Image (tube, rainbow, N blue to C red):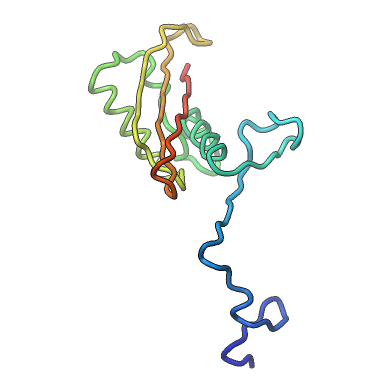
Length: 154
């Protein structure tokens, strides 16, 4: 049995105070770079962190329709259903609610400061309308840093 000052880590005994990280040390979180395969240096599965990781995750969330992912059927926002709706207060509130609900469930490390939705006036690939969604986000750790994520829904 280990003494009170020691902890067993993977079969070896180390001093408890040597394995604890200081609170001031910042732990970096990494994820996959989105879109996959877009970086030549990192190969197909390039890693990213910080603002770039959150931007990629938010773009992926907004561009995914619910039901597209087999193992996560509730992942995504159903924003394509608003393409032919009039962009009035009711539609905007529905889009805002859709984005906030999905964001709260699937994005960690940031919060929404502002949501903007604009009709682009361009035709999409199927000949229909298109929307531009701009999210202004703040990192949870930093109140000073605000960045935008812009997605075109067509």
